[in-house]
Length: 416
Ligand code: HEM
Image (cartoon, rainbow, N blue to C red; front, side, top):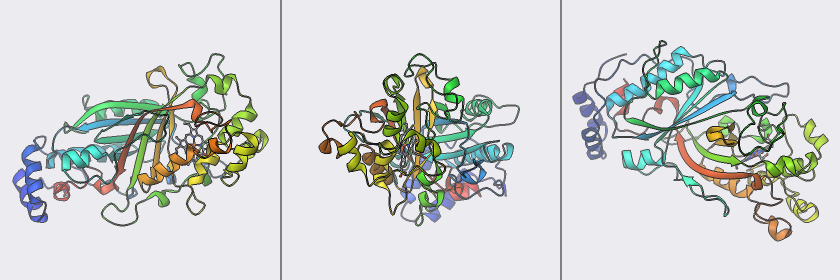
């Protein structure tokens, strides 16, 4: 149904639909230039999940059933430059539908989602944000707190495809494939790039933060030498989905940028000491090598770890935040060499940002230094010593049908 909606028609429909919010709608549309003539909008691509974050069904599995994440990732970060109008909604939705038509949904083609930050809800729409602004989450970090309006997460096994689409979405010309930009109501500010998967960190380890001697093993999927994301240590997509209310079918996303400084990780520690810090001191390297779909994170013996071993493990500490025995985060993080620095873009999905905050606070293991003075907030305390959080951001991921400017009054008719 590619009925064109005139600006007048849009005002009439949205004004009628919105008794209490009519003033807001009028104001938005007055300010919103609307981006010119609404571009044609193809129909929604059939067969895609209603939840934007439902990626797992498309992922290959290892023999233990653990999903293998797409090898390459990009986070495109935008400001919302002005109040959006109907043409902006159609332009963004049209660009996204174009991606779905041209690239198979999956890591062999493309996976993506669009998320919106507090700046969009508060400043653009003038409504309370469904996600809180980010804040520092340990006493030893001082991250910049991002206030981007919009984040697009692209993922694929094809790095070159992501590079091309990044340029296309930012509006750098139309590609032969017919890709379109997101429109000028979104002002591109930054792209973060990265990778995860066996061999990639070793091949890209010549950056600051990794000591000389090429210590990252060739079989490692991540810079720190361990694999992450075993399925029982992750929340499922159902568990992180908002169940009821206006935002049902969506979820929340935390995005932090972490700098890795692995000199002493590889220079001073042996494998046993690294395993103790990543999992728990009660875990041996031989046991860790046999983990299949679950790293038994042993939250209960954390006090024993502190008192008897003088070390607590990262997974052990994070698991203190489990609810009814289940992790609360679905981690979709990946490594990075942005800016010539070894780093992690820590992308995490959870039903509520409060789940992220609780888990991240648990990772501080704040009680451990009281149990053993040999442990500080950073020393002998999981992996805290080697990771430095430099930026934090929170977003809402709406369900697919609401991904272009969610909660904007009148957006439905604009897409009709
Ligand atoms: C930055 C480098 C990090 C690395 C290399 C890393 C690695 C790991 C590994 C190897 C595990 C155990 C097994 C598994 O994931 O399947 C784990 C568990 C976990 N990590 Fe991390 N992690 C990192 C940062 C973080 C951060 C920033 C958070 C935020 C809270 C976090 C939260 C968790 C959680 C919730 C678990 C599962 C705990 C459970 O089983 O309940 N990790 N991590």
